[in-house]
Length: 277
Image (cartoon, rainbow, N blue to C red; front, side, top):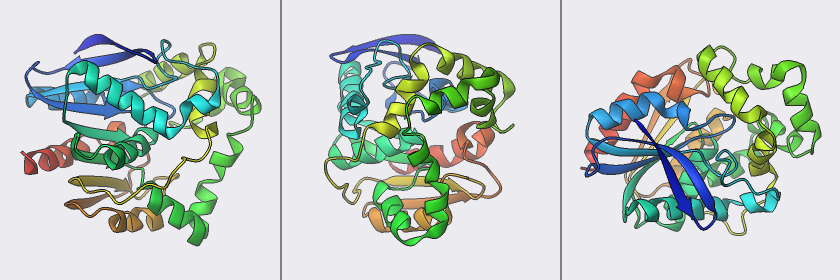
């Protein structure tokens, strides 16, 4: 693995790159409250299989792309970041993988730029349309998503998460993420402005348009012990994909699939990628 700086009109993204330069291009998008390091197991496995893998710290997580206004984290801007990163890399098409908020950006990228996305893999996060449907119809999902409303308060949320040596921020990882990784995430997000930037993803407001049905080969991986996303939205996601679709459930695994169950995720991901070879 090597470090990579990716300059764009929005600023410079920090990234990890691995695999042969002429390998099949694949982009990994992390979520909250993590960094590109969440993908270390997938990066190593995919690079060893000949993929050219790039995992950036996304907007707000990269110090070089950390605007202060919450509106600068709208989903259309986050999708533009994906396009800018891949254009700088010289990728006209690529395999796209996302987890948590990175998964939401991946869904929107596949909807907005289907010709660029060779395959889509989303971990944990249901299709945004499926999630919206569940929020209207399912009490369980409404209860799970209450935190999204709470986190829009500024700066109360940051103060609460970082108080007492970031006790509440550390609690998110709940022993499911290795201690060394959790400590690295806490250090990263404790730097001035970093946690506010990460929370601005929740504060940016609703997308300006509705997302459509996805028409690219899609793998969706959900886990039964995920506290954020329940079964209603997970099952509903099938209604929002008209391309080849595979839904896989990991039993008794929490939200942090890439780090908690890396072998299972890597196996599913490689099968999905090979099917579209």
